[in-house]
Image 1 (cartoon, helix red, strand yellow):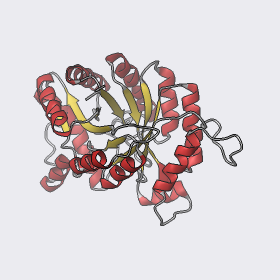
Image 2: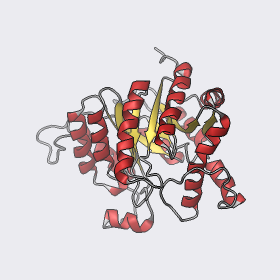
Image 3: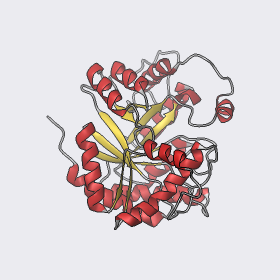
Image 4: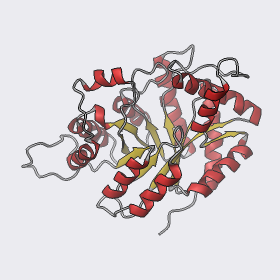
Length: 334
């Protein structure tokens, strides 16, 4: 593992406002920068009461302006919701304002429910244009001749690093074919992680963007002074995910000591499986679990995330994780 990074979904806790959630995101980004995290990524979700990062590029700009060195990016932008030219202009503008610090991860899912997807896209199309849209976007960010009929301004020549995100084999195949870095959403959909990484590494074709495969995996982390405290704090995310799975999305719940009264055992089993690529506990427990994940999947980069109701506890969890990950970091091969 060459780098460790942080994904923040700008959670809106019960009893808090969207403004407070965005302020917490900014504070967490500064905290992550001071702790030595390599990247700070935000994600596009829509019509979600518990997530404040819907206007992802806007939040990225705010976070980048509030920090100095850490890379800031999208994990990711849901490309079917947008015209590639507009994404290139937005991220070209970000890269112009914050040179060398902006990343663009691209996802194929809508990041929302079908009704909201229709509201976002206005005109739904049946064919899957994701590969063509990625290629079009890459061209807009590349060196284009001034005579090109359509150019992204800003955007052209910024060479914003583009990542393919995925939770299935599709994204792994596309990232390998295009020669792009690949990030797997194992923090909530780990079923195909091992197979996707194998396909990506085996089929990777060197490109102008990347000479050898570079794979990132994501893991949930909830760290505290004791295993018991960490399990208590993690109950917020478990409950939020259970509610989402059963069609009741909402703000990030306060932690509970016992979820059995609200979450039936079959649903909890599904939630635990979906969130199984994770580490929960005191520092030594988290180190043991993260070391096991790194040993098994051999990621070039590990991105952690964690939905914790109390912001001070989330800051502490992030600091514990940073200490653990620094010890697990290894230099890149020559």
